[in-house]
Image (cartoon, rainbow, N blue to C red; front, side, top):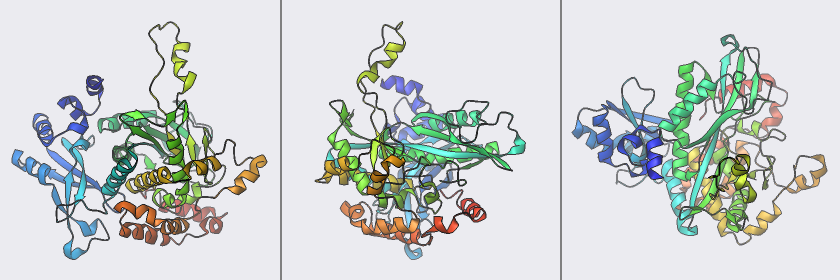
Amino acid sequence: MRDCEISLNPNKLVRYLKKPACEFTKNDIIQFVEDNEIEMINFRYIAEDGRLKTLTFVITGKEHLDSILTSGERVDGSSLFSFVEAGSSDLYVVPRYKTAFVNPFSDRPSLDILCAFYTNEGKPLESAPEYILKKAQASFKEKTGYTFRAMGELEYYLIMPKEMGNLYPARDQAGYHESGPFSNFQAFKDEALELIAMAGGKIKYAHSEVGNFTDDKNIYEQQEIEFLPVPAEDAVDQMVVAKWILRMLADEYGLLLSFAPKITVGKAGSGLHIHMMLEKDGQNMMVEDGKLSDDARKMIAGILDLAEPLTAFGNTIPTSYLRLVPHQEAPTNICWGDRNRSVLVRVPLGWLGEANKMAALENPQDKNLKAVNEVKQTVELRSGDGSADLYHFVAGIIVAAQHGLEMENGLKVAEELYMDVNIFDEEHKDKLEQLKGLPTSCYESADKLEATRALFEANGIFPAGVIDRFVDHLKAYEDKDLSERLYGKSEEIAKLVDNYIHHM
């Protein structure tokens, strides 16, 4: 299996070095650079604003390359983090070799590597986004014995002027899994998948999404890329790189691309759903005796219990809360269910029982087909959107999952919040009234985070200063009752949407 994964892997370093990325060493990187005439190295890292930053080196010799790969480089921390004072602002950025990939856009052969932040004392920066996630994963494994695996669903809109042509217009809000020519951007999607895979992204699939409409000036088409479950740190790394690649590619195509949670009122918004699973000794532990395991249910209970403060990391701009409204396939109430898209946490199909024999039934001529033994079950948190501060959001989800596994009444909470009906149907109005709702503004999400901050600060995962910054930043929007204030004011809504179209 390992040889097969290497020979078919689209990452050029994996195929050339004949080893998985998690085994890359400094000497491997140097060998690849020398043998493939790489001229530049780009250090990439996420700072406080959640945006990808770049530091570019021209390689002047093997000794120089060895030096930057070994020691990293200094950066001005006060320009990257508000808590770093200008008087002592230097930080180190140190490359993480497993993240290396060939830059698909540079005119000169270039290698990109994600980095971690270190202090002047040579210690990890406690408040660095990637280190907070690393601490959350380590604590989760130590306390529960499980590895937390995750995968994201990136939804985004592609926007082009109508004069570029639309001979086969799609039906309004009916673009789900549409094929070309009624899907305008098939070529874009195919190229994006190739480039993300070459950069190390473990992609499950991609397709056009529901959102599809036109206005007086533009054509709008929504797409989605879904990844495979990997350790949480890798899941975030690949989403960060994928978002960069998608924007760069859209720029080359002359298209506007946005991950904004809302493009316009009345049309499908873009979410960033996170699937998760518990793993031990390489095995998916979400299922027991053919049904969702007790620990999976406890994990769900913890996420539901902290669903309100999690919006502080996963829904970080005022337009996030224009998406979290009823009847838009976006969650508004705190509950969970199987295959139910009106809930906050959904349990999707998992190929259990007779479902693992489907291919054999459909293809009786293939006598070698056997039942699928792999357990693929995940659960999906549906609240997040493209404004999510990814490292903090996934770290927060892990904290919530651990909280659930440690709750004495976790199974009871899960049982009480399980919904097997559409809670928005009039006949189930009584059930809807019993449920707590998600925050309706950044200000409210900040209040919820402040009230539960001790759970996120436990075990030193989220430093107090990080929580303070999120609370202060979210409250600074002053968006209490924003939806009510903007109701019916289409011009003001359009202005707000445009203001946050490229936030993250």
